[in-house]
Length: 115
Image (tube, rainbow, N blue to C red; front, side):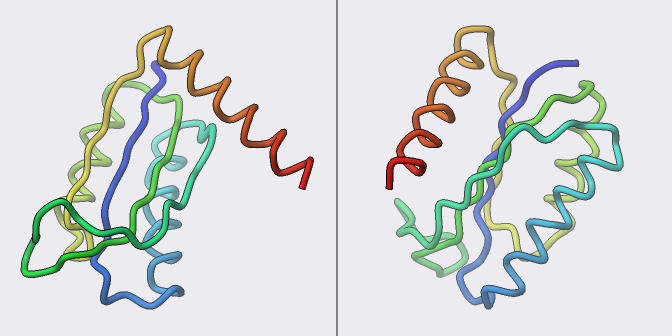
């Protein structure tokens, strides 16, 4: 099993509930394929660098997970089939990137506990 990180941008016309349902759908695709979800971050509504389908903003979501390489093909097929997804990118994390991500998650949790 390899560690991956996927970021996808959802169309801004969705309600909060629809956005959360879509994220849960993709998490379900991963767990159904045998992936272990490590972390999930909702980056919220952000301005795009350039318009996509005449939209200038989008909901960003990051999911880190461990999975077999075949799972990526299934996940990206689901991204392409869903009209709510504007863009997506899935990256296999190298050893140092995985260590950095774990350190970043630890720092975030420490900041939350301090507050």
